[in-house]
Length: 331
Ligand SMILES: Cc1ncc(COP(=O)(O)O)c(C=O)c1O
Image (tube, rainbow, N blue to C red; front, side, top):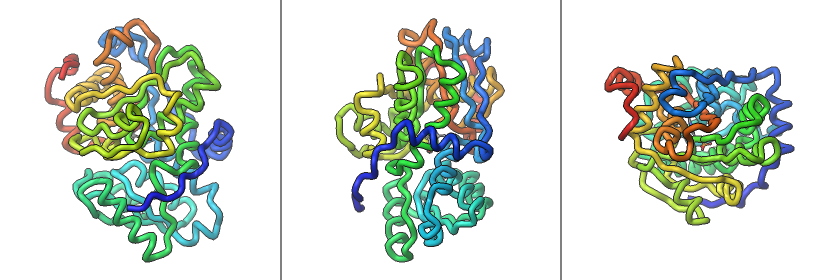
């Protein structure tokens, strides 16, 4: 697997430029608090609803920013990238808008609904590899063989700047937040949150969260270098298996803390969002709430934003919503 030179680190100016570019293409998403959810959490919890994006996840902000800013010649070559689902939908959506040929390599075994959604947007899907590393290797081969432009889901500055626009919306609405909890796979969302908070809400602590069963980004942040870890989680958006250099570089020194939660806690948070916030969240989209519920010592009595990053729950996740007591938060 190749390690290309690292792209320039995005700045707040890039996030502001992305906002201008997205204006008129994506409306701002809502952010609400729900008294019954606050009661369970013992905190004022604002849920930022990225699950209502046209692709069902925040990633679409990045795909549109990348494609609209890309030189025509590069677009003509076509794109190839790799993803467990939401980055794939984001690129497919943006490529459909601009009529750019696009191949997405997804690990075999990702949720069928996500594969169908990407294909329905007109992109070509190849199922290859048992995990993201396998899918990445296949995407790199395709890029070399066909001359397509290879898009890294984690180390592409335009993707990071694009997803940062969600945090401009959050801090414009609630500059008084005490804490913001961001689910992490590659880390683009959390890194962008740090960039934006530094300027617009310097008092707000940014907390990242990942599944304890796939802690590569967490362990990379703690180690100060990118490491690989096995993937034992069913939570697709968080299942990256390695640290990505660009977001890690931004997280270093800016992120307040990085928590790990169990998949069981994430499932319990999904049930709570369904019960009390009439929200269908996929596991990754509920991880922020899971982190809040896991650590009342840190979050109780505070003003907290959790980003519901996606709503593309699999059939199994939807079936599991009916299992168990929505008020149980242990696990
Ligand atoms: C729903 C959802 N939440 C969170 C993440 C993690 O985002 P990032 O890769 O920017 O850390 C992803 C990644 O695909 C996702 O799909």
